[in-house]
Length: 523
View 1: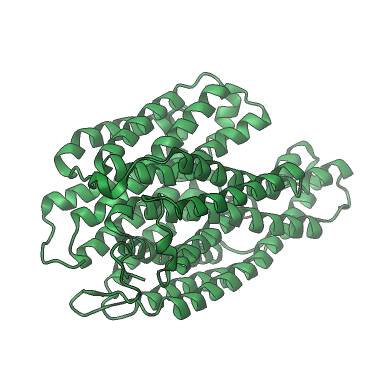
View 2: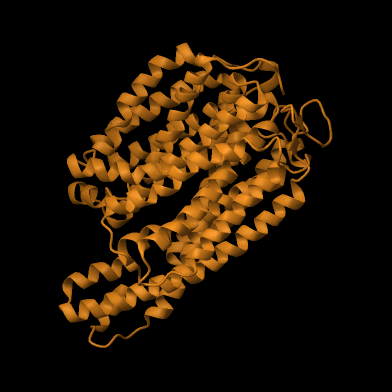
């Protein structure tokens, strides 16, 4: 994969153009955090509609990634990227000026469709533009940091805009950026398309199987986390897993599969996918505690809480490139394992939090988890590109992103379920001087406890809030133990299953494994 051709100014400008779309996609995952009250006051959605406004974007994004990655390889990656930008931009305009909950839900779904086209196509173009290994790793580092920064920057952007404009501004801001990208991309980004005989025909049945399988599993997992074990979401998870098996079996009988089954026989391919999902399981799953802890326990306003949360992506931006520059001297598996160890330290810090903990202790834990996983994702993205045959880069990138979305959903479900059980147990059913109805409402969520205090007498409100904060702090500290265990197990998996991947001093990758015409021996 190594060549002597180095990228110039045009290629680095192309990297900027390619990093902005995933940045916007990531921002729009978290930008609704603070806007929901304003949207609810204006559009008057039902509780079900409000949940769909929040969730539909991520559902469609995750469900369509595999299909869009395959379409990019089939019809051309730049073309798919520009179509995705157009869809995303128009849907952003529609979301900004939505006049009903139904209209906003539809526009958010279309946004997810456009975002699914942006993610794999932009990543798949990086190895086309950056053929030198070291420069490719630098480009992938920038790309990964853009996604990480977008997720962290979303709440900050939301808070700033909502302080000055109406809620539609959080979507409207996408439109001029997309317009600039559509003008610049034809001049900066090459029109790369694989030969027709390498990709074959688009398989609609495989696309449908992957879409329904992913949507069913992610929706079912989230519903199980919110409402407990019920027949419909449990059936959705089981049905989705069955469809996923059918999808894999079908790929084995296709001449041009969406995902080549031979990749799964390549040494280390499954560990890469597993660890990628595990990283998102940790960072997304535990975020439900860190965000609420800053606002509900410490008592920060939304915008200051979002600004403190930015500490993690800011520090990652300075440390991750340094770590990526060490892959010629240190095996990538050891660097990634160190990322998990750093995350484990962050979770260890979070086991020490109490209702009286200061901001610096909590932010230190957040930074440890965020920086550790950011290091992991940058290196894993590089490996995902390295293991991919040229005709499957988009599909493999999409598969990796899909599993990350699934890992995040599963993390929210498991962390959320365990944390909620601990919170309810420590809160109890009776608090002296507090009405039983208020205690029952407070046992649902920490946010519910804060809301119910608005209707209580001052002494009762203080008593309820003190107990609720202590219960939530206990839930946070005990649940963090699960994060430590999973991070340490993942570090061991990396060292034992991926330590064979090395880079020589000349930057040439040593890629052991079975050599076949279509499956590179990256891992």
